[in-house]
Image (cartoon, rainbow, N blue to C red; front, side, top):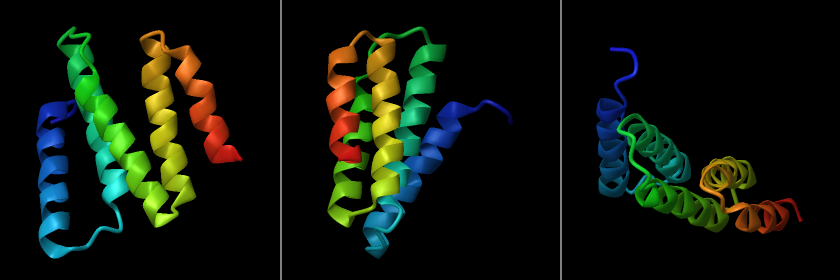
Length: 103
């Protein structure tokens, strides 16, 4: 079914749980980024303005990627977070986040 973000979010949660169970954490940063994107889309579709859960997923994805020294995954998660911040008027936080990664 096209556009079933809630179902996809459930699959992301299951994938994260499986990662914890199997101790295979290679894709954790990307899983949390995807989960954040899905939560963000669900919130938009439901016309909610509370994006805290999506923001938390993006931040966790960034932290995981940094610990794994996975720059490309860190940048992907940071870009997602920056897009979220820009959409809610947090422009000041965006630039330092990206500068830190690029430096």
